[in-house]
Amino acid sequence: MTAMASKGARTASEALARRYRALLAGGCGRAWLERQLRHVQAMPDDLPDDPQQLPGWALAHVSAVAEAHAAYLRQRQEGGPRRYFANRAHALWFLQQVAPTKAVDGAWLHGTLRHWRDPRYHGLIRTFLEELGNGDPRCNHVLIYQRLLSRLGCLQGPPLKPERYLQGALQLALGQQCEQRLPEVIGYNLGYEQPPLHLLITTHELAELGIDAHYFQLHVTIDNAASGHACRALESLRLLQPSSAGEAFYQRLRQGYRLNDLGLDTPSLIATFDLEHELLGALERKRVYGQFMHSDRCRLQGRTINQWLAEPGAMAAFLDALQAQGWVERNRNPLHSRLWALIEGPTAAMFGVFSAYEKQLWHDWIAGSWQGPSVRRVMPGQWEQDLALEPAVPCAAPASTIDGLIAAMAGNRHAEPAGLRATRDYIRATGLAQGGPC
Ligand SMILES: [Fe+2]
Ligand SMILES: [Fe+2]
Image (cartoon, rainbow, N blue to C red; front, side, top):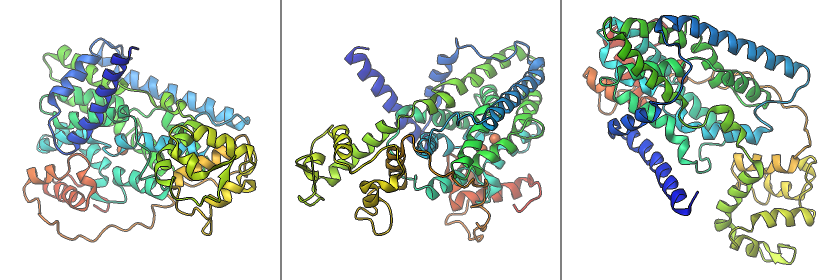
């Protein structure tokens, strides 16, 4: 790639992060979505040419995933290694990479809320309301993910590549354009709600690494093809496809379905993780703040720590120097490394300097091939049980009309107290309540 072309690609992808933020703030994504749809026009997909065959296609998908999952479990029972996450840092990195998408979970269906009088839309609306936990903060998917990141010390993660905002931006744009883009919304929903193999493997491996996999486990169950979101996606398509012009509708649905394939797929994203690269990145970002903070008594290979930190791009040599001088003994329990004692523990000299994620990077980089004692498997959701429903305080500005309630449920606003309240009010006002606490 020429320097000019790579600068062009960089600028285009930076625009993506800006686009995501603008959409989140309510900006219009119509023209941008049209460009994305043009982009996928010539892309292949695995949908059958005849929509009548979709139930069979969905069934085949479920069987293929179940079979591949059984093979995965067999491999693991026979002592095979984890397929996705080499270590805990790898898993934490992944959770942060997909955060922009998880922060708008369900957003592509927002525009269906306006059709509450039309029973053909109720399947899609119900799916959207379930993504929002029916206004219960314990069940709101966006909040469940936020709490997970917060507990893991990953809320302020490293800067993400702009491409990580692509799927989230698509979801927000589709949610806005439901009136003009209903076939595409249905197609996107059909693709997004089919439970994939990577969801099952992720759930398994996160729990194995001592990370609460409730968010992922929840999607295994709620998106199930027998009666969950995947099943409803098909049923909604059957109800909403027009009796005439069915072919044009289906072609547009396919374009929406293909939007799911834009950007890097989950297994490929997971495979791009490079532990040392991430550690170096974290140190490079921290370097600027640390270069005046160390005593000049701290020396490493003849240079003070402040001198090491003052030099851009010197962190790889710094890691080598730490090893050469015996501060770090890699491929052993990190507890044996002098550096680890400076980082970890309430009395550590550098207590609080590194975030939980950064400490995990250090830990796993030092540990290398050393396999520590196996981590206690965390039962999904064990942290969520004590969370109480927040008191029903009135919103600062009550959204009294249905339109006002719908507006308060857009983007990820529904995860704020006023949005949760609006969700519950919408359910009451439309008569769409379906039992349960809300
Ligand atoms: Fe969800
Ligand atoms: Fe879902």
